[in-house]
Length: 292
Length: 273
Image 1: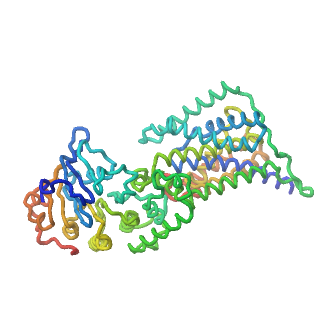
Image 2 (image 1 turned 180 degrees about the vertical axis):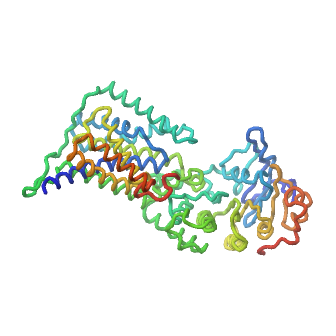
Image 3 (image 1 turned 60 degrees about the vertical axis):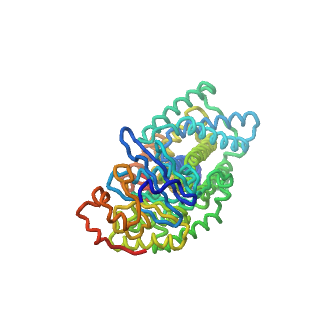
C-alpha cells in the first residue's frame, strides 16, 4: 500500500512538471500556431538565470520569480528577434529556426557554465511525509503541486474569463480577421511567447531539484516527454496538457519502477502512437483545433 | 451617376474612396476608382469576376495597399486595420473566416473588439475582466438571437450548416453596431428564401440605425437591385457606372460588360425597400 501511494505521489509530481511544461507548449501553440522546439533550451536558459540569483541570494522564492521574468524576457527576445520575421507559409520555418535557437542557447550555456550538473537547493524537504507507516509525498512535491495548481488556474482564468485570452485565441486562429476586430495581433503573439516561456522556465526550475539537475541539456528529455504529453492531451487544450501530463507521469513512474528506466520512453511512445491512431487531434482537443 | 458626378468628397460621407489605383505585379487591379457611401446609405458594389471588388474591400480595410489614392472614413484617413473596428467599421468575408476553434458565441464576442488597441488596462487584462466578458457574452447572445440562431451559441461553427455559418459571420459584424458595414458576397451559397431574408436583414440594419451605412459586394443581382440605394459597377478595375438601381438596370454599358445582353432586367425581383 505504502509503495503504491509513494509511486502514485512520485508519478503525479513528475507528471505535474510534464503538465506544466506541456502547458507552455500549448500556450505558444494557442497564441501563434507554432510548435516551439526551442522551448526546452529557452526554459533551461531561464533556469540558469534563476540559478545565478539562487547562489547569489539563497532565496528559492526569489529564484521562482526570476525564472518567470527571465523566461518571459527570453520569450520576447526570441519572438521579436527571430520568429516575427519568419515567412508563415510553412510551419517548417519556425521549427528549423527553433532548432537553431536550441543549438545556440545550449552552446552558450555550455561555454558559460560548463556541462556539469549544478545543484539547486530548495527550502523544503525532499523526504516523503509519513502518515502512520505510510510514506506519501515530500513537502517539496507538495510545494510543486501548489505552484503548478496556481499557475494552471491562472492560465485557465486568463483564457476563459478575460477578453485578453479570447483575443489571444482569436489572433491564433485567424490573424487577419482578429486584426479587423481590433486585436493587436503582434502584441498577442508577443504575449503568447512571454507567457509560454515563463511557464516553461518555471517547469524546468521546479523539476531541477528532483528530476533533472541543471545542465545545458536538462530540458531535452523534459521537452520530449512534455511534447508527447501535449500531443496526447491535444495541442490546443490546457486541460488536456494537465490531465495527460499527470497520467503520463504516473505511467512513466510505474513502468520504470517495474521494468527499468529504459522501458519508460518506449511506453510513452506507444501511448502516443495509440492516441494518434485512435484520436489524432488528442484526447481533449476540440475537433480541427490543431489544424486551425 | 458617373465617377465624375461624385465630385469632391462630401463632408458627411461615411466612406469616401478617391482615385484608388492598385497594381499587383504587372496587373492593374483597380484604376482611379472613386465613390462615396453616405450615412444611412446602402451601396452595392458589383462587377464580373476579377473586376476588383474584393481588392477594393481589402484596400478599404487596410488588408491590401493601394498604389495611389485615398480612403476616408467619416472624413478621416482610414485607420490601420486593427483600429478599424474602433472607428465603427465591420466586415464579413467571402470565405466566412470564422474562428474554427471558438464557439459561435465566442466568435461573435470577438466582434466586440476584445482589446481596445493601446489600452493599458486591456493589455494587462483589467478591462478584459469577467464583467467585461459577461457583458460581451450577453451582447453576442442578443446578436445571435436577433438573427434567429441563439441556440447555436455553444456549438462550433464547423458543426453548423453553411447558411447558419453565414449568419454567425453576420452576427459578428453586427454585434458592435458598426457605422459602416462591409459585406463581401453575403448571399453566396444561400438559397432563394435565405437571400430574401438577407435582403430584409440588410434593410433592417439601416432602418434600425439611420446612421449605419452598408457597402456590399454581391453577385446576386436581384438582391443588389432590391436593397441598394446606389450601385457602383466595376469592370476590369474601373468604375464603368454608378447610380440608382433603376439607372443601372437600363445602362447599356453595364448590360454589355456585366449583366450580359440576354438578361431581362424586368424579371429582376426581390425584396423592396
